[in-house]
Picture (spheres, rainbow, N blue to C red):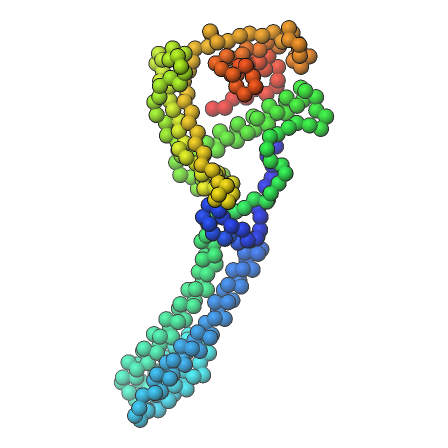
Length: 318
């Protein structure tokens, strides 16, 4: 019963990092990678033309007589189309002159190294340029949807059917949450399940605490100590992934104190057959109200239906 999500493809701003992000489909990213590699290869030609012009001008501007080898090297440089091709051809020319001049390799080595540096630089850039545009992270923006908020069972379902569907949905959500906690909390996990939220787990601290009620006698203190769970401040953009403007983002903190409590003095039993809305309950339903204080618009804190076993939704969560 989970709602499918659709990833937005296009340019968007990540408010958590204040960076613009381009999200593409698998097909689009393949075209982009090919285009970037092609662009890097194309840029190597004008860069090499500028580099060889500088090298040619500097070397040809020196006064004095020039050797035949010098003119061959200059002609080879002027007509070369790439740094790799120039280095390869210059190596053959130097090999042809090996018996004529012993120092020919010393004169050609700077040119070979210079052209190889440019060749290797553009080769490495072509290999790693797709990695550069994926370095921004794995965050994506979800398409807006109207299927968000509280689940309401409609489509003509009866009260019993709606209750059964609501219980089933609650069971699925509880089971999914329990599985997520087992897999993603308590240690690092590389599972894709733990990468579907901005933070794989929300930090919290657990410490001993005092009884949270006005009357400390309400807490069971024998072999038990209340504990406080504190998340600290969680940012709606960074931790929850809402991606709102910085001015609209909020810091949320949840502090919960847990303790077993005495229940006998605070429980009232109600037979629903005596209520004005008895028709809303299965005949013979008995309710137990735990009265530790009003909750929202109800005078009790929690209500337990003793006939909940009539719903065929038995399960165990370990």
